[in-house]
Image (cartoon, rainbow, N blue to C red; front, side):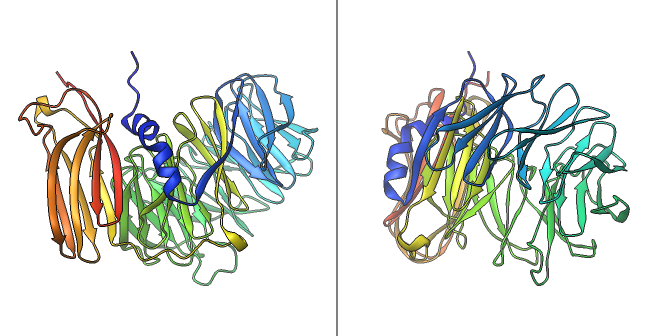
Length: 453
């Protein structure tokens, strides 16, 4: 029997409670006729998704109602991308298709020289993706004419980033390329410490001190300046496959170890937060929140403290995320498309008091007491608070009290659970909740105990 990840099961246990506490709500869910493939997109009031049945579908962002459906000649190889009034998808017959975003009318089809090796990036005038022959190729959105093909060292496995005058992509040969947007001529080539598995992302054009950042296979976030020179690297736990989210106050990155990091614009780690599952390829920003999807949860985080302010449970493990106008769209393994948002008056997030509970990290999220495994929770307190740290089972029954203090002073704390219950017995295999309560603030993470024999 297939084991369901702890984060998914915990989401089912905690979902209604988490949603009720904050302003983020599940706006709608739509059942999909087949499994979603790759990335989703949102543009022009519509959400777009490619399905394993060989179709591309559009849904109203406001209601979740299907607006149009188009059938490909083969199963999709990539997810969808949206830009310049088009929706794009590559299929397994080595074809790149463009449809009109509003009505789904076919625009053009282009032949690929190899199977797509990355997701698609789309700007206002061109689309680009990696092909499985160590190239990155770009097409004009207006008519599908190929603009250029840039040959690289290594495979392009993450979607490129399209800027005002350049396209940037990384490869498995530890290299980042910056090429001219219109010609594909290589302008800059930078060697990284690891394979460029993460999707690059950049500041909006015109931002002072603009950065471009991406994740590498050796667990680092690398930042480049507008000229392509490497500025800094930040070591994180896990592979930062998610495209970093660059904001004026920080650079946010998520990893396949279920951790969200807030980095300063100079590369120092400000805080990190455990989310209980691999962070999907994209992050998003809504008013007053940074949004990440991991496991079965869409988490709305405070940008300053990294604290999870609200959680939304769409059903199933989230595989892709997109955002437009403050509405977040996700696709899940339960064949669902869902939308969530923070509803506040006047279009701005309500002011939140500064969090006292910061940087809660639970590692690992799966362990076996029978092989001397253990789980560790670390966190910081910004101000003195009553403190309780405990572990409960899926029914909410406490199995172990790790800490109970009438007043815990500002400091960094670390507690370990070895899988032994209050009755001095080994906890049976299953899903548990490790909870940190600091006064009126609390955060819970799913952990899974396995036999490991």
